Length: 594
Image: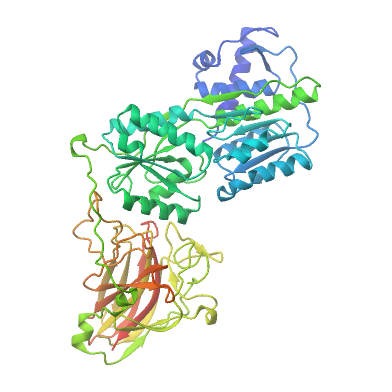
């Protein structure tokens, strides 16, 4: 939707003209102007700030007045530098629009969230090199090193970093105390008592957030919630995913998560929200599609207010210096957030609070190689006359061994190519070095979209043209949850079909809801944080490091399909996935028993 602040600015100028106010005349507050002119207070505040920077209005202390001389912003000898970590979020996007509207040149230095520790070096190079006329710094995580670096920079700057309170530069941010307290109170009123805060594990700003969270919990008498802190070492989605799963296994009693906006998307992709767990996010920094379901957020209703304040303050600093006047003292401005309810939280009964229970796990296994030797009963009773591995080489589209292959960011290690006997079945594992770097067929999902610029498929057809007793599939699954997300459809020469739905087990134990009875799990996530089981026609095989078996464990699954029409030729196997369901499927091998 197009921003309304230009309309508000024009309406205010028209109102001034009608009132016939002379230069220097005082104006009502922005709240009274908003009510008078029919705009929200946030939009009117931004409109006033825009007119301040353009010289239409001025300030006499805190009072808005009509400028004595209407003027345009001074021309800058150089450019404003925007340092953004994470890159190009909603705040930065709005800053760029505002600077462009005012004809001000700028350049952007984008810093990935994972590289936030480099911010001090970046700012030092800017200050010691070709100095910009001003800097707008936006960062999600601040360090002591960054705080010290800011004290050495004496050019105009505005900092937007929640929890960072620089004494040498102006800053703007959402009131974090209000954000945390409103979030905890909202969950408490819905009946949640077992709450967790999910955050990064380092940084003095993180310590401040934790203290605010603990204070808000203790005000409500939530001692256990105050001590339940989930954390991740990094912002990388795969590491965040792993951290969430690990924390969930440790604290299955938790019914709600409070987290930053930058983690909201990953939480909704990891868990079934709000059925499995309720989520409240603080702030809003993403661009593009919003999470599904819409998340309950504690945020500023209009981020344009922060961006407008930052631009106006920086421009005023630059104009003051260029006019040869002494700089004004830095200011810190806090904006109070609002609770905007979504569909990511649900009411739970305070009388039936979840109780922590022991998570069940598979019986201990002496050596991971034993998981490979669990032969299917059908093979023991029907013999193993002749095997025929099916050719997947032309369909393969992903590497096993490289980063960002396989099922996501991490490769599958210690699984060499060749003929491997798993659960009594000979599976032919493709050699990616001899097959264009491809060894598996990975399908599209919310977590895996494309490879080498090509979109991953939502379905493929594997040629068979054989009379078979049974078919055996070897595959892996990522981002598992209890949903029928894919199926193997067997096509017969007679025109008949047979379907095999793929349903991961997902997280288990504690107060986690059980999957619907009509869904029969036959698969599980490949990561070691999940409980691994054998099912009637699906067995798990642990991939391990032969030199040190306990140092690395990942899991593949084989799937058995016994042909109900053994005299009817099988023409093909159609693989279909629901790209929006969540889990990721990688097909490794298929073998037919003739």
